Length: 216
Image (tube, rainbow, N blue to C red; front, top):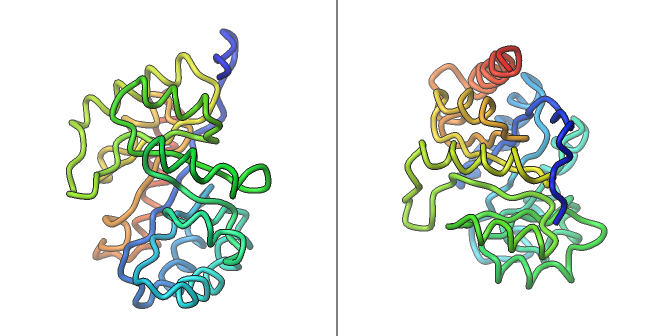
């Protein structure tokens, strides 16, 4: 696992958009959002158990994402990434990551979240994760205290070269995560639930990122 060079300056942080599980109208909402701001990656949460339906859903969204220069990642389902035209997958936990590496690497991205401790994060990086994520909710909807997430991001950004993603559960969390050193700030449900529309919400998140970058 590579440590960060002492004189290295990180690139400006970018947005990492997580889609809602409700797929209704997602194609149109996603296109509107991606037209409003720069996004590095889109994490697609697949629903249902029909494999062919999941692949077709991802295939329908892939051009919308990739034509904007963003990577399309599947939330889990590494075995479907190639057939769905996705750029990789996001895995939860060390075991899931290790089990997916043979399927994804070297052609596709393998990201890892569900990392409860610093040691888990280092193990994920050593195993070959392309990025680590901090702060997302677990299967029961629980997430760490935000202050702990910011601390974890700051520690990682200071020490390690492999990118980290900080998960912002609300608009107000975008700037602190970016200021702490997150390479990417993940945003999700609140963008698609915003009364202003997802395009305005995403543009707002991009402005918050820019504020943090200027302050840095």
